[in-house]
Length: 173
Image (cartoon, rainbow, N blue to C red; front, side, top):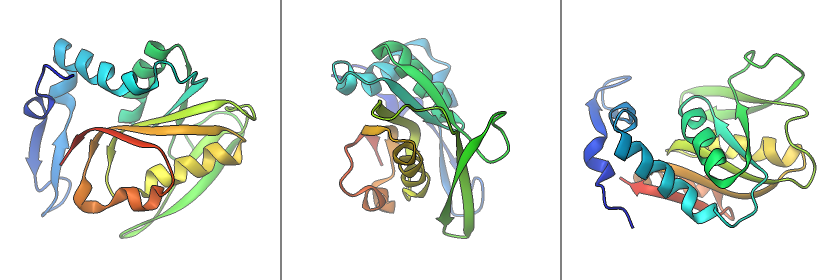
């Protein structure tokens, strides 16, 4: 399917944001028109006939990828943000990190009960952020159809926190 080697277009940044972490920087992929096109095509393809109503993008690179996927498949787009960034009434989901806690928020009226939802983000790592987003979608009555990621860091076993979910990733490391 892919005629472009997307992995070759992603910059690896050692020791970012802290020593021992190898950060996969997708900005080098996004700036290339063919790379961006291939990325969106790859993320959208499994869902083109899934009758998705809305795509939920997780802050912040999920906004870039999710909005493009939503446009491609004819769906609306909903941002899931860090606390305090949404202007109207929001619901919050707190989740565990390896070094503490974090939280995500979604507008309380963002998803109508029964809407078919796809969650999109750039990276599936430990799965905590994605699992929190799935709980937000379900709390609002959305019918989660799947989660799509550009990159999955398989060695971190993020899918374990998403057991039973339809998880798709374009690239695996």
